[in-house]
Length: 230
Image (cartoon, rainbow, N blue to C red; front, side, top):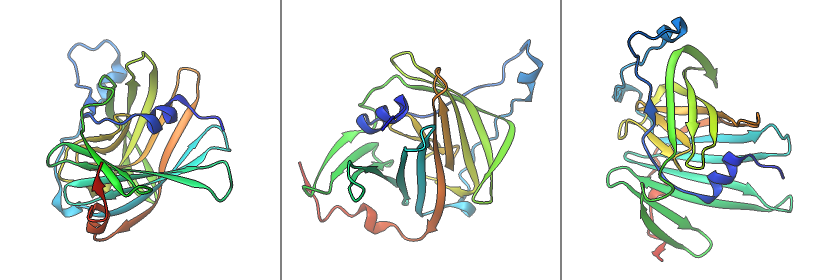
């Protein structure tokens, strides 16, 4: 199954860093750049969300059809990746919990009932994102979503076009920004990301789009009582 470079990095590396935002400069020669606006990031308690958001992961290859669940707690985020195996009935699962209160990442192994803890910033540092709001908006699940677009640069020199659609109705107020594995924004400006698209220099695209939002209590997803440290 053909995978883009982004998905290969996604399943084999794990880190987190804050998304970097472009600032409006002075004396910019390109008039189009004057349309740039950076809305003020506000932790909006009225739209605070706890629950599960389910995403599909696709590429330009129609055979690629993976999925992920992102679980939002009060100050933790859990990401579950579902990766198809070689058989139609086979599926593998990877689980990560980011604790934003102490900047740790917990890697769960459901097969062995174990987990290990790392710092959020210890893996593959060097990926950079430059995303800005240019008065462009979209919709996902009939929800109005401002688009933040720009580029992502990886430590090996690869440059991607990138764009994120953030929900106006769902906020995670414990962190202004959070990037899963430092290559997928999950929270931007306290708002939850419902769509993420990248395109490589060879025009290979990857799409991560929410297809279902399930609000509710998520404490059970962060309970480690059934696991033991490695």
